[in-house]
Length: 287
Image (tube, rainbow, N blue to C red; front, side, top):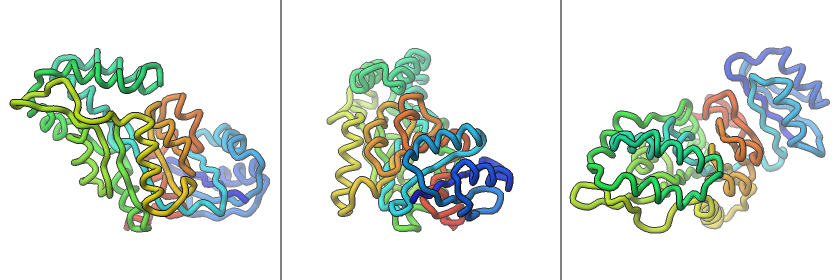
């Protein structure tokens, strides 16, 4: 049996629910929140095909199709840039060096999966050589904003006892304060090398690429004594592909096409709080 969760961005009508019920071939329907989100219980041999049909029928809603017996999760692993926050930090930091357009073009290609992530990151970081270290603080304070629903999501997950991990192909200088502000239990990211008050154009330690993100997910599963099926992973770009494919619930958040194609679910309309409905917690979970 599968649970199908349908979340509207504003109003989800009785007519929408009826259409979903007809598409699923089930009248086992339960409103999670009147006018916003509904669950349907149904049988299907092709959950992704059912998801696609529902997305076509209800383009203003976000759809989650999960096995009913695995809906409860224990771990949440999230990307940061353009997922938990609204910007790509390296692009914004490059703006302080007058190189935003050049760096952003490489970032976009890397997130589409057109470039080797590690090589593209090292190339972009090299362009920041000589930039004042104080630019990081200015960028963090002036340009880094939490995505809509981010605080509500993490608070709701933590209240339900779900461990939360922020794993970023960006930098600890941004990820650590973002993770602390949102309440993540662990933060993993790249380290920008600094010397004499300036960036050196290098990073320290191994790069957090797609393989490293998957390793972090597996480390956390092992530490919790759970399988991948009990984990959620969410991101927006190609660097998130391996962890999103591996997790029991892999979510593409307003994502690039490659990740959207691979994910179990695609948040195309709503904000991050949509995930709370997917795991059966509802909007009041953070209260």
